[in-house]
Image 1 (cartoon, chains in turn red, yellow):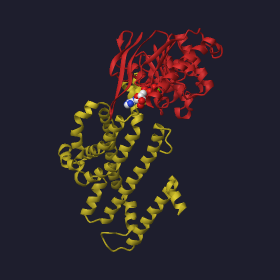
Image 2 (image 1 turned 30 degrees about the horizontal axis):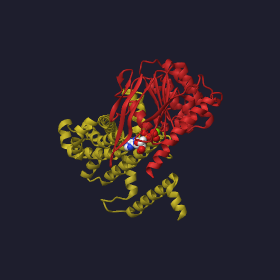
Image 3 (image 1 turned 120 degrees about the horizontal axis):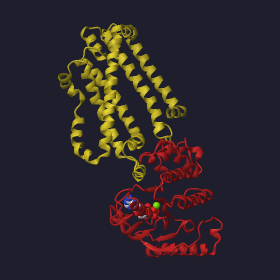
Length: 261
Length: 262
Ligand SMILES: Nc1ncnc2c1ncn2[C@@H]1O[C@H](COP(=O)(O)OP(=O)(O)O)[C@@H](O)[C@H]1O
Ligand SMILES: [Mg+2]
């Protein structure tokens, strides 16, 4: 349903162009959680911005349900890596979550219900009237997640969403993502640099190289659903997949280190 | 010395030092003009007496009221149009490119140069004054608003685009609050400009108001009255600026609660 073909993104810089992503091709199936793992600076955010329609690729394209993405599609929602600045500092948590719902002819009651549910899901029911600056970084990130969930997108794009939350919250939010996918059938494109997280959450994991990045390998994660933080992670298959992905990433980092030496 | 430097860095310290300076200046004026026989520089108590007397008469109040009405109407018009046009220019690149040179030219013309034209258009009276005040206060508001709208945080802009927040919602919930600090800067510059234009236009193109009283008193050699008009003008300018700075603080803290001290 979401097809990326030969996508290349070159940023103009003073010393000529800088190619962050080169020749990237993959297809995300409807209802799957597809994650992209790679070292930092690999061009993951660049890739997501092109897929989300926020930037145009230099060449190649992105197709959603057969149509080329040339601007942010109606059915996508994003959780930005830079979550703190993606929230409105002057609006309450409730308004931040509600604002994207205001068009589309949603009634006030319906919007209210969705905001309440989404905030309850991320454990922030009490914060509805607070301003973002009154919340910790991890809580702000949960607001950004609540905003995306309340929007009920067909495709949910998440850019390293759990990078700044503590371990327990992180585990809870991972399970929330799995639950949303299970209950709503949302297709999720998930970027992380955490190998365990990608294996635990995904149907498939794509490993990307350093920039100019391309896909080194796509790994099928045949672990049973529903997943469980303890049971799933103690499966021998989990350990094997984790080691496999981890090895792939390490080799990439080493390759470039050697190449630079 | 250390206490002096620390007090400069706190708001209360600054207020105390400022008040001390103002009192010193007032004291100096009082001493220097004491028992003055010079008609051009009457003694301060005489001026204050006249201020207290004249500006409480029906005529004095009518003139004060005329000035305040035209000033507030002119500033309101200038601010409303400045913000509206500034938001359009700041968000639509092609509009900006199309009218930017014309705008640079137009704003280089001092509003006072248009007094004869305004009088021709509106005659002698309130409308001329309002037009000039509005025109003069328009520019700082417009240019600051446009610049602010161009510089909205890219992440904020992206999240608005990603969630397709557009139209009225985008303007009301995202753009205006984001640009508000710059709008406030524009208004802060516009207020003294408005005062200058108010007095100037009253001096040449009106039959009432503070500026009219001042020139009229000068022409009839009532120099104490002239000075009292100047004192009222000073008090008026100071009060408006002070009241505005309080409002500005509240609004700034609302628009960016993270800022330490607005
Ligand atoms: N707007 C830009 N202009 C120039 N270079 C950029 C820009 N955005 C990102 N880059 C560069 O592209 C590379 C990939 O960045 P990014 O997509 O943010 O990587 P990741 O999200 O994987 O950490 C980095 O080397 C970064 O410096
Ligand atoms: Mg990134």
